[in-house]
Image (cartoon, rainbow, N blue to C red; front, top):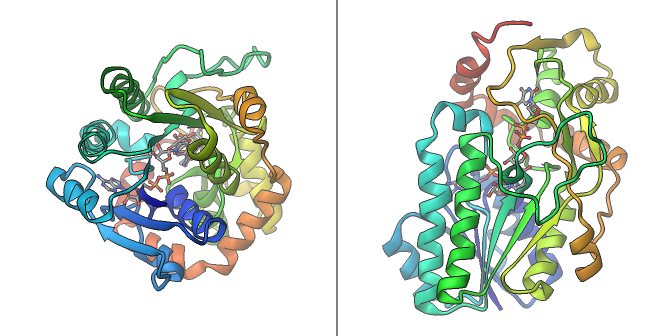
Length: 342
Ligand code: NAD
Ligand code: TDX
């Protein structure tokens, strides 16, 4: 089996590459990644010499390059993680989100049509469902929940999902989609909540919580997500959407306080800053379908996962300190420099 994994130098994609090489020692895993600011070749260092692994620097929007790779590798499966993934950046510069997340998906699916494929899997997000109110803890996102997006990021992911289903219906492309909740774990890029708070706390820098910090996210350890995708590409039904989440809802402020506690840092580092525009209040996945159809359940409890994650960041200082010492500094200054305290 040959699997093309796009975006495999990013957070979830790299964890998926590691997971698949370990789990399926007879599979060939080909990672296609543009190496944007969010992709790091150093992340893949441990597998670069693996004979079952190949890395190709390529933009998913590059039709000729993608077609050539398909000709060379004749993939059985494509798993598309490649995306612009940060909501805050999408509010500043929406265009690249539309280009990569929608048009890039189209290029990949066109190649799948042209060269033939057993499965095209689109890695989507719970953000396509919009948000839920805080005062209705009984409500969850199911696969039937209408698409109702808030940010340019989520709109671009929803656009891609619709296109994937259109390619299935129109061209009979064998597709599946997974819509997962917030992931956390090793190699999470430091612009996102959990790694940003760990890095800032370790440097005794302010911890910028948007608004009151009451927004709720449903956190899933990244390996549990990888296992879900592995199950879907092997046993999931073509043309179906699978929600992935672990019923692990946490308020942002509680996560930040927990990180302070684990690192022995004072909560006085917390600063409440101007809220994200259009900030979604609550995400909560109902994972009944993937549980009943494919037997998937999350294995890592949050208390254990967050400890493992913090430990990983303590043991891999070089990885993230290299990132935050580069272009990231300009990003941070732009995003947080003038953000008023509230
Ligand atoms: P990430 O930003 O850490 O990684 C994205 C990767 O895609 C990077 O390696 C980047 O170089 C690559 N990439 C970007 N544009 C590309 C292009 N045009 N061509 C080729 N490669 C390109 O993102 P992540 O957090 O690992 O998310 C991966 C996928 O999972 C995304 O599709 C995202 O929407 C989805 N997702 C993420 C989460 C989460 O909590 N992080 C939750 C649900 C779904
Ligand atoms: O500095 C911050 N302060 C803060 O309060 C940052 C970076 C975030 N936040 C808040 C915003 C959110 O309510 O923390 C929450 C989590 O923020 P992010 O880590 O940016 O994640 P989120 O916006 O929830 O989106 C993530 O989950 C769904 C991923 O980035 C998406 O790619 C995925 O689809």
